[in-house]
Length: 136
Image 1 (tube, helix red, strand yellow):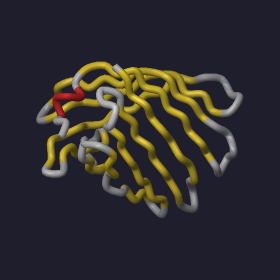
Image 2 (cartoon, rainbow, N blue to C red):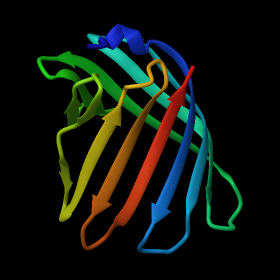
Image 3 (cartoon, rainbow, N blue to C red):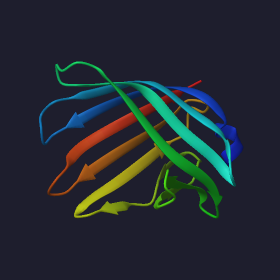
Image 4 (tube, rainbow, N blue to C red):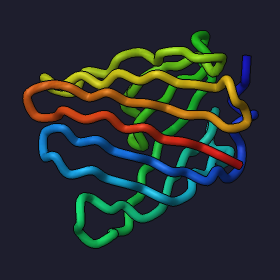
């Protein structure tokens, strides 16, 4: 099993978004950087997001990664819980309810050091699939 420190450093990040609600595909290209912070790692992604034929716009996202009995606990930047995952093989993370929408993730570490996270989000306000690919 991988450990928290295995993720340290910079990753090239490509993300494809299939938004079935709007019918407009999205694409994100940028970097994800994990640096030591507090009891774990600080995750920061930065890049350009393009939705449909619209102009590309700057986008960022921040999380906290902490060691946990399940492997890794991911929290929002403000410390609120998000989900847990086991960094090994192909494994689902824990579900994350957000209002009446439900976020489900499947991680794939079988081609380490390349890895992927595929989110399926469904509910009355959202209906999309998002695949993020990480490479050194």
